[in-house]
Image (cartoon, rainbow, N blue to C red; front, side):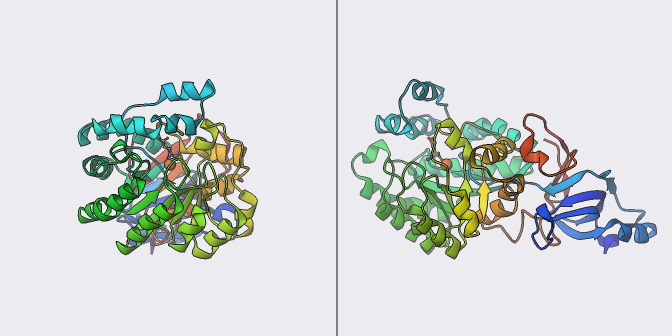
Length: 412
Ligand code: NIG
Ligand code: FE
C-alpha cells in the first residue's frame, strides 16, 4: 500500500533489472516506487498513485519527471585499500617488461605490500576515501574490498578493518574478502606450501574470529599459487562458512574456475583463458563470471574471455573495476561498463546487469540488492537519461540526479 510508505518516487521509468519483467532491462515505464525504512515497499503503475493521491498528502513525494531509476551499482571486485602506487611499473611495462617479469623480480604486488605494511588503519582509510568517493559519485552503493597487500597477520587484518571502517563513515555497504593467498610474502620465499598452511591455520581463523571477512579469495596463477594450494584455501573457507571468490584464468588456464565451482564459489574473476569445461562447471554451480576489462586494458591483453560460451551456458556475468595500483588503476565503474562493451562486446544490458543483479549474486547478496523489487534494499539511482543503454555508452558525463542508499537520499 502506498500510504504505508515513508516516501514515494513518482513519474519514474524503472529499469528494474528484475527479469520477471520480460522487457529488456526489466523496464517498467511510468511507475511509482515507494520506500519504507531501508527497503523498497511498493512498485506500481502511476494510475495507482493517482487513485490513492488524496490519502497520500503527508508523504514526501519526489517527482522523477520521467527520469530513469536503476538499482544502484555494485562494484563486486576491488583492491580499494592499499598504500603507494605503481606508476613506475606502468612505465616499465610500456617499455617492454611484462607483468609476470616485474612480479618475478620482486616488484608488482610485493611492491604494494611493502607500502601497505607501513600504513596504519587510519592512513589506509584516508587513502581509500577519494577512491571510494569517485566510485560513489558514479552510483555505487555496494563495494567489495579485498585484503592481499599485507600478507602478514597484522597487515592483512588491518586492511579488512580499514574496509569495514568505511561503512561507518559513508553511506555504502562493503563486502570484505580475505585475499591472504595473493602473492608469496618475502618471509616465505621458496616455501609456498608453508605459507598456505599459515593462511589456513592462522590467518583465516583470526579474520573469522573478528568477523572481518565475508569471503576468501585466491590468486591461482603460475606467478602466484597452484591449484593444490588454492584448493586448501577453498576447503578452509568452506569449513568456516565464508563465501569464495577466485582470481582465475587471468594469464593462463589453470582450471581454477572449475576447481572453485566445485566449492560453490560465488564468483570466478578475470577468466581470459577460461575453457568450455570451466564454463560448464560454473554454470552447474551457479558461479558468477566476473569480468574485469580494466585489467585486460591496462595489461594490453589480447585474449578475450569466452563471452559467447558464457552466454550459451547462461553463466551470469558481473562487471567490476578491479581497482588496484597494478593492473587496474581505475576508479570508474561506468568506464568499466563501457570497456566491457567495447573490449568484450557485452551488450549495454549485460553491462548494466553486470553491475546490479549479477554483481549482487557475485557477493552472495542476490536476495537483497541489485534489483528494483519489493522487499529489496532501497538502494537506487535516479538518472537524467532517457534509456539505460546510455549508462554504458557515454563516459565522462555524470548524469546522476539522486542517489538513494538504504531508503535515504545521500550526497557524495
Ligand atoms: O586483480 N591478479 C591479481 N591481482 C590483481 C592485481 C594485483 C596487483 O597487481 O597489485 C588483479 O589484477
Ligand atoms: Fe583483482
